[in-house]
Amino acid sequence: MTRSPAAAARVLAEHAREGAAVRIRGAHGAVGARVLADASGVVRLVIVVADDAAALRVATDLAFVRGERAPTADSTDGPIVVMPALDTSPFG
Image (cartoon, rainbow, N blue to C red; front, side, top):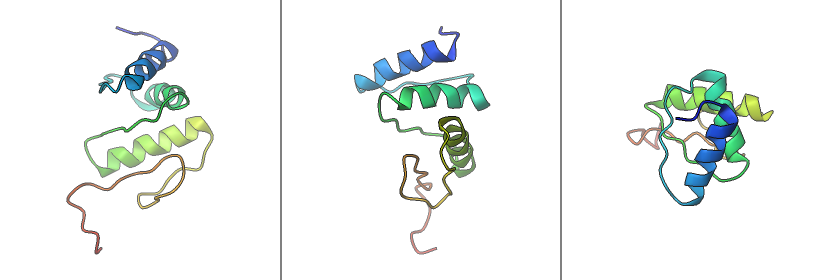
């Protein structure tokens, strides 16, 4: 078990480079965002969460830690993109 955000980011980046899926538990709020921000500076990440609200919350926290503009639910450009749920209609 990794205890520090920096160590967790290194482990996450190592596994991501190998193409492995990584599950992170217990890293809520700023700690989770710090781990993701540190790892995203090394590798590209796809972060899967339970629902649209959680996706926007993680994206907003990550943008804040990285010093970037927070994405909106429908933004499709930029370093952080929030994808809608699979059951979302493309026709509004």
